[in-house]
Image (cartoon, rainbow, N blue to C red; front, side):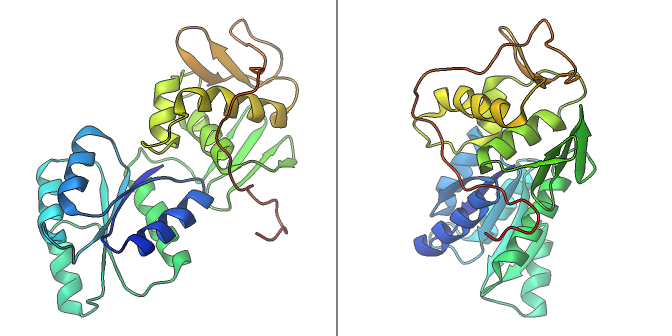
Length: 251
């Protein structure tokens, strides 16, 4: 899932982004409305967290323009104004949801994930294929009943591959667009590095296949397919992330 945070209070924007990234969400930040519209014109986002009270181009105008652009991006509007009239006005502008400040992070996360599901074709919260089970709500992964501890990027890559139709190939560019922030300097190597680590954690027999010249897909996990290639080796500076917890583990 990819989220754009539009919030002029930089500390709050960074706090929101840091929390979402810990939960395997790719996040970009912009501090004003005009920059947000530029981002949306040239990049796809599942959800925009929009501060209503932006200086310069007001959040209401940003919301109206996004709706007018007919984007699939869902809008969660944030504001310190919590009256019923304000909430109704915000929703009337085209926002999909409304959250007043101050807010609990867990509620923000739940609303973002719910909006993200609405921005995509309907899929069950638990994805299963080839002996893999990925629970998007609990952020847990297991293979053949064995729970795995994945970094947030590994989790997000695996989720993207499982969300693809059975047998469908997901290109490296699509994975970058889905999982990594736009300003990440090492994105070109990040896919290979993350897949190498993910394949090692998933174990044998290999379940992620490489389709030469096209991308990656989830195989049957029974034996090496014709398109499978082993983990990429070599020392490359790649993404780092917090681990996704196993059941019963604390963060």
